[in-house]
Length: 64
Image 1 (cartoon, helix red, strand yellow):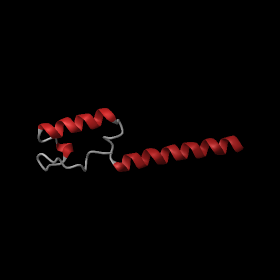
Image 2 (tube, helix red, strand yellow; image 1 turned 30 degrees about the horizontal axis):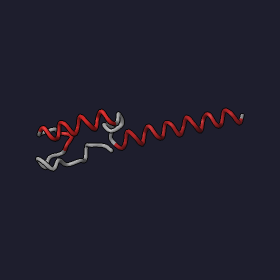
Image 3 (cartoon, one colour; image 1 turned 45 degrees about the vertical axis):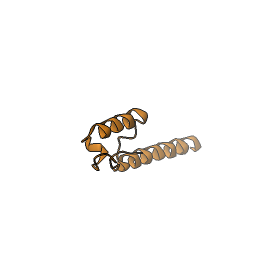
């Protein structure tokens, strides 16, 4: 889960801004739990596209 769209229940601000101690603690916890959590969805889609292309090239090389 990315935290760039989460809203803090304590201060009603985006968690990614870290305005209150609760936001900062949750932001840090999410970053430690999942190293991909800090990436935005477009970056994740780009990584997935690169992985699919690499697998397709590997499969094409194996059949040739």
